[in-house]
Amino acid sequence: DAGVTQSPTHLIKTRGQHVTLRCSPISGHKSVSWYQQVLGQGPQFIFQYYEKEERGRGNFPDRFSARQFPNYSSELNVNALLLGDSALYLCASNPIVQDIHGYTFGSGTRLTVV
Amino acid sequence: AQSVTQLGSHVSVSEGALVLLRCNYSSSVPPYLFWYVQYPNQGLQLLLKYTSAATLVKGINGFEAEFKKSETSFHLTKPSAHMRDAAEYFCAVSVPGNTPLVFGKGTRLSVIA
Image (cartoon, rainbow over all chains, first blue to last red; front, side, top):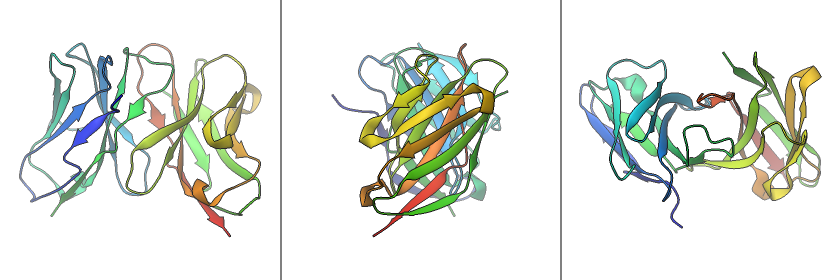
């Protein structure tokens, strides 16, 4: 079975631009979460979606938004990029909203803002 | 709110030596605890998890961790380190009721030949 797939793997954007990151969960998983991992830090929770509804939001500005599609894939959008948005963005999927068996993470999208 | 503290941002051990990575948690309710490993330029891989069953949890690649409520700890151990264990290790906590994972800052493990 395919794992969690994220695209693109790397991208470079200029300050002020907009970016869209994509995530396809494991087949059968209905929940997708997004995390931001700044270099040298642990991942920080951004959003969780389940059955196309937002079920949780971390402490991130409104420039960050996300959505989940009927096929359970998800997009993370970031507007008006800042240098500080440079990070590895990780997507995690799990079968239900709270999966005590552990989230499965993708390999991430490395975003560099210049 | 939950939190995790990983003691030691960098741990270095010799190949074949014991690996001990420390994690202390804070939670007002019984937690779920996880250890993840991250190899360079990759995502996170689940090593093991504690979800209120056995307090000694065995994971992949020979790692294990013991949940100690009295010490609010969940330290990760491996009896004999291999070169391939060199990576970043993250401890994470969540609690029942739709809460996201809260990660520690990570511990980088180096294995010396």
